[in-house]
Length: 413
Ligand code: HSE
Image 1 (tube, rainbow, N blue to C red):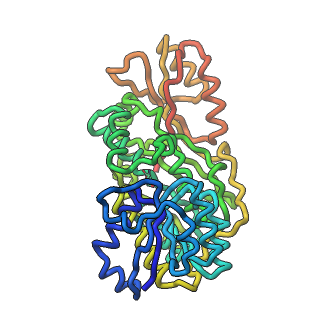
Image 2: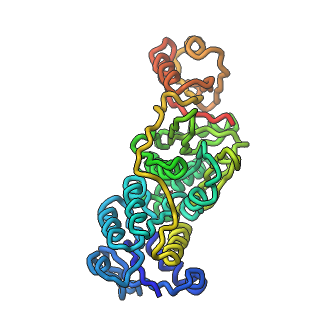
Image 3: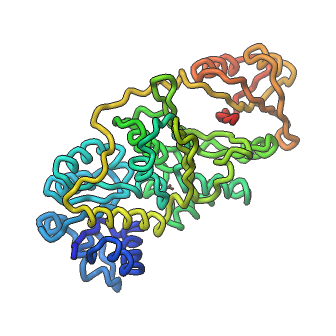
């Protein structure tokens, strides 16, 4: 028998106990040993919940108990999770976590400790909820040089964009629903401002490129500026707006970005709706591979956590994954990355404004909607982010142009 402790009895923590309970027999068979949850740590009380018999409010008995071999950290947030996890690893206990903040910030150091101690620090659930992506990147795609990872990595924002489009609901109403369904972070700003997707693409990039990619170096833009008007233009152009996280090799350097993107309907990510996530990996040998599944929610995430628990239990005294080094990867400045923009211009004089736009961007194709009669939209040619930024700034003070209402990146393939 192997005894484990679960830190945090929130959405994911309660899901882990539920999965262990429901599928206990087959899980134990696969692990080759019986897995027993000895402690659950949480600040709160849960009257009437059977968890009460194993609930503790203090980490010390857990860390000091030599019978506990695996710690499951599903509390979220950097502290106290970091302190608890580091101490556990230093004490020789393997750790399984779903905490992307922790992995993005301290992953390199924690992996190093696990390696030195010949134990495991596993985090399949930190990216893509229930989708297996960490293991494939670490084990199955090792023959490849990966040159691009692009994905929809946040379930909450994808759920919001889908519902705004399909049901015409307001941003706030759908966000509330995503919170009620247990998709959103405790502070949903992390979802809607793109920070959660940013941490996830940092983790995937670190894995793919073998060096520590600092999430704070990644350009990040969320979906809070996306309006019903943007949705209407997207529909007119036969496109979908998605929050896309991407990390690409350009020559020998890598740039990374999180932002809303207008995708053509024949782009595979355009068909990813609701809480689903999808991750495209491009390798020089395998070509394109896509991973798809539920990216958030209690049971999909718990399923990935439990899979890691099984692996940790099977390999109690053997480090099984080599992830990335502590060496930091310097990312290429985003202003050198190529892109195209869809831009909406509010005008005071239409022909004057079109003339100004064409002076800056060359010949354009105007997109107009009857319901928004004081503005038009257009798509720029492909240039670097830096060059486009300068051109957009030029336009803001041009005669006939009242304001730039929004600008959204466009993916042509
Ligand atoms: N808030 C996250 C999401 C949870 O919506 O994707 C899963 O990491």
